[in-house]
Image (cartoon, one colour):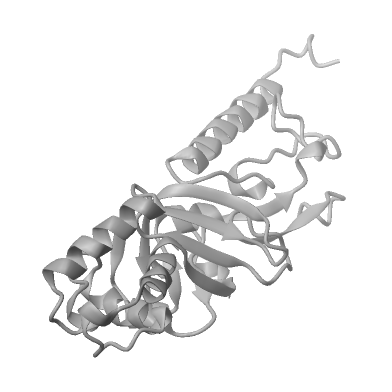
Length: 241
Protein backbone atom coordinates (compact mmCIF):
# COMPACT_ATOMS: atom_id res chain seq x y z
CA UNK A 1 0.00 0.00 0.00
CA UNK A 2 2.78 2.44 0.92
CA UNK A 3 4.48 1.76 -2.40
CA UNK A 4 1.24 2.31 -4.28
CA UNK A 5 0.98 5.69 -2.56
CA UNK A 6 4.41 6.70 -3.81
CA UNK A 7 6.72 5.62 -1.03
CA UNK A 8 10.12 4.06 -1.68
CA UNK A 9 10.34 0.55 -0.23
CA UNK A 10 13.68 -0.97 0.72
CA UNK A 11 13.17 -4.67 0.01
CA UNK A 12 12.60 -6.45 3.35
CA UNK A 13 15.06 -9.16 4.31
CA UNK A 14 15.81 -11.11 7.45
CA UNK A 15 17.87 -9.43 10.14
CA UNK A 16 18.90 -11.01 13.43
CA UNK A 17 18.71 -14.38 11.74
CA UNK A 18 20.67 -17.65 12.07
CA UNK A 19 23.36 -18.43 9.49
CA UNK A 20 23.57 -21.47 7.21
CA UNK A 21 27.01 -23.06 6.92
CA UNK A 22 28.81 -24.37 3.86
CA UNK A 23 29.61 -27.93 4.81
CA UNK A 24 28.52 -30.15 7.68
CA UNK A 25 30.77 -29.48 10.67
CA UNK A 26 28.15 -27.51 12.59
CA UNK A 27 25.61 -30.27 12.10
CA UNK A 28 28.03 -32.70 13.75
CA UNK A 29 27.89 -30.49 16.86
CA UNK A 30 24.14 -29.82 16.75
CA UNK A 31 22.81 -28.61 20.08
CA UNK A 32 26.18 -27.51 21.46
CA UNK A 33 26.03 -24.06 23.04
CA UNK A 34 29.26 -22.17 23.70
CA UNK A 35 29.51 -19.29 26.14
CA UNK A 36 32.26 -16.70 26.47
CA UNK A 37 33.58 -17.08 22.95
CA UNK A 38 34.79 -14.35 20.59
CA UNK A 39 33.34 -14.10 17.09
CA UNK A 40 34.41 -12.23 13.97
CA UNK A 41 32.37 -11.94 10.79
CA UNK A 42 34.72 -11.60 7.82
CA UNK A 43 33.64 -10.72 4.28
CA UNK A 44 34.97 -12.14 1.02
CA UNK A 45 37.74 -9.52 0.96
CA UNK A 46 38.99 -10.60 4.37
CA UNK A 47 37.69 -7.51 6.14
CA UNK A 48 36.21 -7.92 9.61
CA UNK A 49 32.75 -6.31 9.46
CA UNK A 50 31.62 -7.36 12.93
CA UNK A 51 33.17 -8.76 16.09
CA UNK A 52 31.82 -9.43 19.55
CA UNK A 53 32.01 -11.67 22.60
CA UNK A 54 29.15 -13.82 23.78
CA UNK A 55 27.22 -17.03 23.21
CA UNK A 56 26.47 -19.10 20.12
CA UNK A 57 24.69 -22.33 19.26
CA UNK A 58 25.59 -24.98 16.70
CA UNK A 59 22.51 -26.20 14.81
CA UNK A 60 21.69 -28.81 12.19
CA UNK A 61 22.11 -26.16 9.49
CA UNK A 62 24.78 -23.83 10.88
CA UNK A 63 25.04 -21.22 13.61
CA UNK A 64 22.63 -19.38 15.87
CA UNK A 65 22.66 -17.66 19.26
CA UNK A 66 22.81 -13.99 20.30
CA UNK A 67 26.24 -13.15 18.91
CA UNK A 68 25.42 -14.78 15.56
CA UNK A 69 22.06 -13.04 15.26
CA UNK A 70 23.78 -9.68 15.74
CA UNK A 71 26.49 -10.62 13.23
CA UNK A 72 23.85 -11.38 10.59
CA UNK A 73 22.74 -7.75 10.63
CA UNK A 74 26.14 -6.79 9.18
CA UNK A 75 25.90 -8.98 6.09
CA UNK A 76 25.43 -6.80 3.03
CA UNK A 77 22.47 -7.59 0.80
CA UNK A 78 23.36 -9.89 -2.07
CA UNK A 79 26.97 -10.29 -0.94
CA UNK A 80 28.39 -13.80 -0.56
CA UNK A 81 31.63 -15.21 0.79
CA UNK A 82 31.26 -14.48 4.50
CA UNK A 83 33.06 -16.51 7.15
CA UNK A 84 32.49 -16.66 10.89
CA UNK A 85 35.73 -17.05 12.82
CA UNK A 86 35.34 -18.31 16.38
CA UNK A 87 37.98 -17.98 19.07
CA UNK A 88 37.11 -20.85 21.38
CA UNK A 89 39.47 -19.63 24.11
CA UNK A 90 39.48 -15.81 23.92
CA UNK A 91 40.66 -15.44 27.52
CA UNK A 92 43.94 -17.17 26.63
CA UNK A 93 46.53 -15.65 24.32
CA UNK A 94 48.46 -18.07 22.11
CA UNK A 95 51.38 -18.44 24.51
CA UNK A 96 49.10 -19.18 27.46
CA UNK A 97 46.96 -21.59 25.44
CA UNK A 98 50.04 -23.45 24.23
CA UNK A 99 51.18 -23.83 27.83
CA UNK A 100 47.73 -25.16 28.71
CA UNK A 101 47.86 -27.69 25.88
CA UNK A 102 51.34 -28.81 26.95
CA UNK A 103 50.12 -29.27 30.52
CA UNK A 104 47.17 -31.37 29.36
CA UNK A 105 49.41 -33.43 27.09
CA UNK A 106 51.85 -34.01 29.93
CA UNK A 107 49.04 -35.39 32.07
CA UNK A 108 47.87 -37.66 29.24
CA UNK A 109 51.15 -38.46 27.52
CA UNK A 110 50.43 -42.17 27.03
CA UNK A 111 46.93 -41.64 25.66
CA UNK A 112 45.76 -41.41 22.08
CA UNK A 113 45.32 -37.84 20.89
CA UNK A 114 41.53 -38.23 20.65
CA UNK A 115 41.38 -39.04 24.36
CA UNK A 116 43.49 -36.09 25.51
CA UNK A 117 41.22 -33.12 24.83
CA UNK A 118 38.27 -33.66 27.17
CA UNK A 119 39.50 -31.03 29.63
CA UNK A 120 39.95 -28.48 26.85
CA UNK A 121 36.94 -28.89 24.56
CA UNK A 122 33.30 -30.05 24.69
CA UNK A 123 32.89 -33.73 23.81
CA UNK A 124 30.93 -33.18 20.57
CA UNK A 125 33.50 -30.70 19.30
CA UNK A 126 36.56 -32.91 19.78
CA UNK A 127 36.19 -35.03 16.57
CA UNK A 128 35.71 -31.89 14.46
CA UNK A 129 38.72 -30.11 15.95
CA UNK A 130 40.87 -33.22 15.54
CA UNK A 131 39.90 -33.53 11.87
CA UNK A 132 40.68 -29.86 11.26
CA UNK A 133 44.04 -30.08 13.04
CA UNK A 134 45.19 -32.83 10.69
CA UNK A 135 46.54 -34.90 13.58
CA UNK A 136 45.89 -38.65 13.60
CA UNK A 137 43.34 -39.24 16.38
CA UNK A 138 45.18 -42.45 17.33
CA UNK A 139 48.59 -40.79 17.59
CA UNK A 140 50.11 -40.96 21.05
CA UNK A 141 50.19 -37.59 22.76
CA UNK A 142 53.87 -37.96 23.67
CA UNK A 143 54.77 -38.11 19.96
CA UNK A 144 52.90 -34.97 18.88
CA UNK A 145 55.32 -32.43 17.43
CA UNK A 146 55.51 -28.70 18.04
CA UNK A 147 54.19 -28.13 14.51
CA UNK A 148 51.20 -30.38 15.15
CA UNK A 149 50.54 -28.64 18.45
CA UNK A 150 50.60 -25.34 16.59
CA UNK A 151 47.97 -26.65 14.16
CA UNK A 152 45.74 -27.58 17.11
CA UNK A 153 46.22 -24.16 18.69
CA UNK A 154 45.33 -22.37 15.45
CA UNK A 155 42.19 -24.49 15.07
CA UNK A 156 41.07 -23.53 18.58
CA UNK A 157 41.87 -19.83 18.21
CA UNK A 158 40.36 -19.53 14.74
CA UNK A 159 37.59 -22.06 14.22
CA UNK A 160 36.25 -20.94 10.85
CA UNK A 161 32.74 -21.57 9.56
CA UNK A 162 32.17 -20.55 5.91
CA UNK A 163 28.66 -19.16 5.50
CA UNK A 164 26.42 -20.13 2.59
CA UNK A 165 23.59 -17.69 3.35
CA UNK A 166 21.25 -16.37 5.99
CA UNK A 167 18.45 -18.64 7.17
CA UNK A 168 15.01 -17.91 5.62
CA UNK A 169 13.28 -14.69 6.60
CA UNK A 170 10.68 -16.78 8.45
CA UNK A 171 13.42 -17.65 10.97
CA UNK A 172 14.42 -14.02 11.53
CA UNK A 173 13.63 -12.19 14.76
CA UNK A 174 13.09 -8.96 12.83
CA UNK A 175 13.40 -7.72 9.28
CA UNK A 176 15.42 -4.92 7.80
CA UNK A 177 13.90 -2.95 4.95
CA UNK A 178 10.55 -1.25 4.61
CA UNK A 179 9.48 2.35 4.05
CA UNK A 180 12.44 4.64 3.43
CA UNK A 181 12.87 6.68 6.62
CA UNK A 182 13.75 9.91 4.80
CA UNK A 183 10.15 9.94 3.54
CA UNK A 184 8.73 9.94 7.08
CA UNK A 185 8.58 12.84 9.56
CA UNK A 186 10.58 11.55 12.53
CA UNK A 187 8.81 13.97 14.91
CA UNK A 188 5.34 12.61 14.15
CA UNK A 189 5.87 9.39 12.10
CA UNK A 190 3.60 10.90 9.45
CA UNK A 191 4.31 10.36 5.79
CA UNK A 192 5.92 13.31 4.06
CA UNK A 193 4.15 12.27 0.87
CA UNK A 194 0.63 11.45 2.04
CA UNK A 195 -1.08 13.54 4.69
CA UNK A 196 -2.71 11.47 7.45
CA UNK A 197 -0.65 8.33 6.74
CA UNK A 198 1.53 7.13 9.63
CA UNK A 199 4.15 4.40 9.94
CA UNK A 200 5.63 2.52 12.90
CA UNK A 201 7.75 -0.48 13.84
CA UNK A 202 8.87 -2.91 11.15
CA UNK A 203 6.99 -1.03 8.45
CA UNK A 204 10.00 1.29 8.56
CA UNK A 205 13.50 0.54 7.30
CA UNK A 206 14.86 0.45 10.85
CA UNK A 207 16.31 -2.45 12.83
CA UNK A 208 18.71 -2.97 15.74
CA UNK A 209 20.55 -5.63 17.73
CA UNK A 210 18.97 -8.09 20.13
CA UNK A 211 18.36 -6.96 23.68
CA UNK A 212 14.95 -5.30 23.45
CA UNK A 213 16.00 -2.54 21.08
CA UNK A 214 13.61 -3.59 18.30
CA UNK A 215 10.73 -3.80 20.76
CA UNK A 216 11.60 -0.31 21.95
CA UNK A 217 11.58 0.94 18.36
CA UNK A 218 8.14 -0.61 17.84
CA UNK A 219 6.71 0.81 21.08
CA UNK A 220 8.20 4.28 20.66
CA UNK A 221 7.28 4.75 17.01
CA UNK A 222 3.83 3.22 17.55
CA UNK A 223 3.11 5.52 20.47
CA UNK A 224 4.35 8.58 18.60
CA UNK A 225 2.34 7.70 15.49
CA UNK A 226 -0.80 7.16 17.57
CA UNK A 227 -0.44 10.37 19.54
CA UNK A 228 0.34 12.35 16.40
CA UNK A 229 -2.63 10.94 14.51
CA UNK A 230 -4.96 11.59 17.46
CA UNK A 231 -3.69 15.14 17.89
CA UNK A 232 -4.28 15.86 14.24
CA UNK A 233 -7.74 14.27 14.24
CA UNK A 234 -8.96 16.15 17.27
CA UNK A 235 -7.55 19.57 16.50
CA UNK A 236 -9.90 22.38 17.35
CA UNK A 237 -11.70 23.70 14.25
CA UNK A 238 -10.10 27.11 14.63
CA UNK A 239 -6.63 25.51 14.59
CA UNK A 240 -7.25 23.39 11.50
CA UNK A 241 -6.72 26.06 8.88
